[in-house]
Each structure stands twice: as C-alpha cells, then as structure tokens.
Length: 156
Length: 142
Image 1 (cartoon, chains in turn yellow, blue):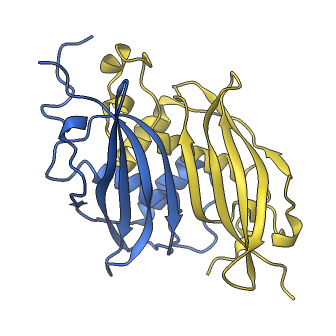
Image 2 (cartoon, chains in turn yellow, blue; image 1 turned 30 degrees about the vertical axis):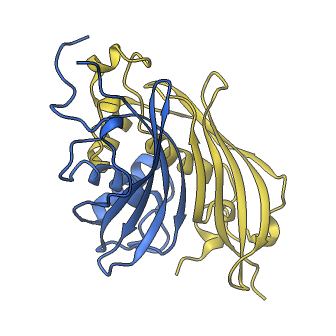
C-alpha cells in the first residue's frame, strides 16, 4: 500500500497540515514536439490533431496540438513539483475541462488552491479537493478543474 | 491544405448511436509503460514498485479506442471529463475499456457527445470509470 503522505520530496506532510485556501505555484515547463510524439506512441492515440502537421495547417489551430491527456499528465507532474506531497498523493477522482490548445513550444505552469477537506471512508485518511489551473505563457488558462485526493492523517 | 483524406472512413456525429456498448481489445500494463509515462509527466516514480500511475490507464484507453471494429470517431476536441479512480492497478494487469454514448446534441461547429467509459481489469473489475465530453465533426457535405 502506498504511504500517501510520503509520495515524493516533502515527507511528513499529512491531512492536518493542509488548510483550505492554501495556494501553490509550480515551476514552468515547455511542451515540445518530442513530448507529443512520445505520448502518441505510448497511448496509441494518433489522431491527426496531434500527428499530421500538414492537415493541421488548415485547421483552426494552424498546427499540431498536444493531446488533452498529455497536458493533464504534464499538469500532474508539475503539480507534484509545486505542492506538498500530501496534496497530490493518490487521486480518487477529478473533474476536468480542456479550454484551449497547447501548442508546440508553449510553456505551461500550474496554479493550485486547496478547495475543501473532508472525512474519508476510513478514519486514517481524509479527502482533499484541489482546484487546479494549467496556465500558458500568455496567462491563458488552457485546462482547469478539480482533483480529489486521499490523504493520510497524522499517525497517533 | 493537402488533398488527401484524414482517414478512409470516419465515424461522424450523425453516425454515433446511443447506448451501443463498444469493447476494446486489451493491453497489458508493463514497466516500460510506467517508465515512459513517468518520463513524460516528470512525476516522481511511485514509491511502491510496479504501481501504475493513475492517469496512465486512461491515456492508454484513448489509444485502445482506435482498435475497435468501427471507424475512428471524428473527434475535433476533447472538451472535458469526470473520472473516478476506484481501484489501483499494478504492472502485469491487463486492461480494456468498455464505452457507450449516453447523449448527443447538435452544436454550431459539430456535435457534442457524452461517452461513458469504464476501464476493466483481467478479473472483470471496473477499476476506473467516468464520463467524457467530446466535440465530434459532422459529416462533410458530399
């Protein structure tokens, strides 16, 4: 079983240490053509939106765009570098909107805020809801939503 | 624009049928999948070895959706989704997805389709499930 409070670099952060209203900002990351090619290969999603530069020249985007789920996956990684480990521990659910394209060369970062805390199904864990926004270099929100996490309570 | 078709045949908004279950082939989750995925996301590798990152099965299910006996859906945009992670997956598990269209409605630029999708493991347990909202192209005028 995963130790929810100790998933990565901020050991010892528990449900009790998170407060509604706390805000975090992640580092940035530039999304590259290689990211899209690897994600297409891994997922098997070769939709022309992500793989056919010539076709996309004539689209409203004008060029290939990142898979929505690639953006979300990058968002998860960035958030894990910007929030205490407990706040991104184990996902139990999410509600997510893809609002705009991520193009090759765009640089994105994550803004997040602890939105709610409540009891979990087990006494040893709580549920934390985090509002997250994936923002590009122009300040546009390209994806946003809420993620729900199972977080360990402090032992004892 | 280059004058070649995107796909020989595509499933357009008009072709989408409600409530018809679509089951994909399976895929076995491997350490290679986990390594590639954590490489892309930049998330720390799971502390427990052979744990599968939460979003990897969903990402794989989007590719599995291309391997069914139906032309690919002419998706213009993935608009959003709601998703529940019900049970953990481990390397060695084999997943497939089962989906059906719940609703469809006309929009200016195409049609919006709400799809219910479940990810099922080799023991027929639903491990992840939710609803996806997709913008699908209308059939081009002949």
